[in-house]
Image (tube, rainbow, N blue to C red; front, side, top):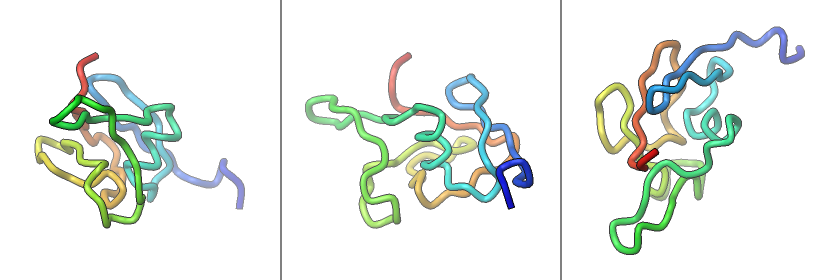
Length: 89
């Protein structure tokens, strides 16, 4: 099976559409599209994105369809999903 056999979905991140492979985690979709940080630490404002990638840490928290505090590495992408980062554009 090659990439052309895999269905793609469209996800909106901070109002910008990105393409992702169906079944992919949101964290993987973000990184694949060049988005490596989507929140900042409370102290120091340092950027955060994927760290463990398996749901153990909380570095990849993001808002998905209005629900805050979702771990991007554990959320499967869905067509039409709306994602909001904690970073200012």
